[in-house]
Length: 235
Length: 273
Image (cartoon, rainbow over all chains, first blue to last red; front, side):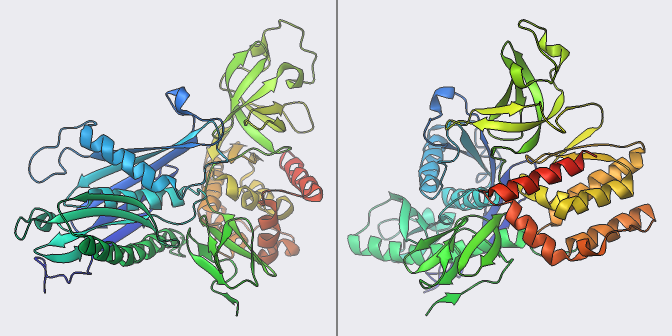
């Protein structure tokens, strides 16, 4: 069966990824999946305010997720942190923290800023993918990249990487949208959030499809970083 | 059967499988997961027999003992000067290590180093909580007057210096600038001719950008010759780029042996003319 935009259930939207796009940052990443665009920058390790957040045994990670005012579907997104942005900052932070080794940076912290100039669906996943490129670009010791994708059920069928149109679908019990992030090498799931009603079988099938998709995404992320160091025009 | 999946000097990224099987050993920048060896940071592979390690391409400076660095004073306290050293942590020059002169108790410390001054100094001690002590007493350690400062990646410093200082002396020869390179990626330079000073800055930035691509020395030599319109004399042995890379890769390793430390300080002396 074809999906609304002509994809098969396993297909991802077209992806474009780059590293080192923002020169002032210690590391940066760009991840575009379909109509969702995410930029991520990494600053630090540096002193973190408020100072009580710093820990004497290891560095801390602070992630800030932000949708730009013009990024939505026509309606202006009110700027500044809201309930949703704070939640997504927190889950992105947890999703990334498990691969990072910050034991060398005690009493300091790393700040990651995820900015979304345009959003369609799966913005937290795109943000995590961009942030993971940025962290690797900044030279941090990390076990692996973190790849993220949304999986779910649309019109009774399990699919990966839902677009906004699919996510908003209400036929056949409504769409199920499950955002997941995974460490590809160990298949460790670092983010799993769900919206909608789903059976156990459907969920397990969706997660397994998501794992395959995450591995594909991780390859694209790694390629993006390698391209930054490719032998180009030296003049 | 063990299998190597990458070539020497290839760029690897976190999570990339660099070797399969138990015959290879992971070192800096790699780790073992099951039967495989994976990279855990962005870097250039350096193979040493069965040992696989990577040389980082990015990341902030982490101070090591005996490093000669350039810091900028940002605070003066009764016990000494605090310096920014292009690192997550700040460092301190205690009064007793501030100068060869005797500094009496209660003296006005801004007479020696003022806020915003750049100082070439040496790391004397680092505590487990990353409190860094510096000394400005020692050969080649001094305050920097005038000139300008360029920040580069700390991991590219060995390439800017070159084998036994060959790269930095080539830039000096071509531009007539005085150059001091700190291990922390702070480069100070000063020249008579602003155009040549600019050229020196561009050359250093070029090295920072392109050092992971082979043939660096030749490329920089060509670049300087084209820009200045002169021919540069370089001792022949310094032109073997392969060898230079090998030596510098050793320098950027995390725990230097005592001998290598000595080599390092020789290089530093070299810069100061």
